[in-house]
Length: 125
Image (tube, rainbow, N blue to C red; front, side, top):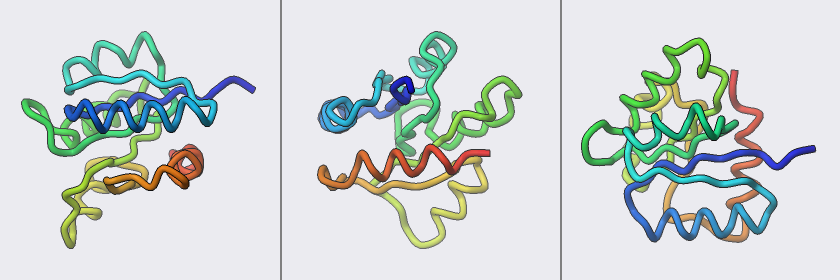
């Protein structure tokens, strides 16, 4: 079985480095993008199975990018996981309405994060 491909879309370099390290150690293939535009250029090439989507980014936010991805028949199968520290009451409903398949909060727990991401792989569809 090939390594699951995960695209981390986050403008915080430290978050990206930590998530990449943890997932790489657990056998994932990881790419990153620092904003929506970079993500849009990497998705067709990398073909991720799962995208960890930061919600609060400069320019196009993660929810808008999620709506675009889920509206594209060629990409709607990709599991999009909202990945943010800013979840308030009611935000998960907004994330789901935008098309997010699951939600993971920051900061991550390094001992359980890879298993959480792996369980999200079955959340799409």
